[in-house]
Image (cartoon, rainbow, N blue to C red):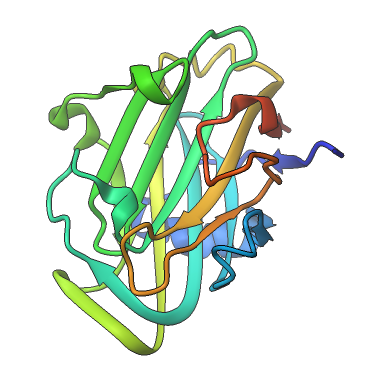
Length: 213
């Protein structure tokens, strides 16, 4: 399997409300289009986005277009993956652990840390609250039909993940996902392909390279 790679370009200081526009102009584009379990879960909403970084944070934004939208979980730390959800997993190659950042279409977050699916430790809610979310849809919402387009942008402070902004590694590893486990049309899409019998995003061995340029 060919390993995916994605550049994360540096942007000079960007005001919070200008981040979506800056990402749109200067961020590196990506597509979340691998349908890894197409026989059981063939539904494929359009999901694409852009990623970049400043001297303090990662910037990542998604654009989603599909049928319907679901947001049932209305607080940070809940089972966000059940809703219409976008996710970013990453790790420093020197770490034994990785982080999972999951956000639903309403802007509610889950952030965990661990070495595998079964040992996740969630960040405290006060730490999750430091992640800026821009965009989304009014929640709660549960629409099973009709086209729905939504966008979500996150600002992820480096220090929240134990990264030293002055000594970032040249390469991180990670993957980017679109899912909705308990939506009307369950789906599991990824940026870098995953080769497992059943849907499983907690697979660092399939992470692609994230190049800090």
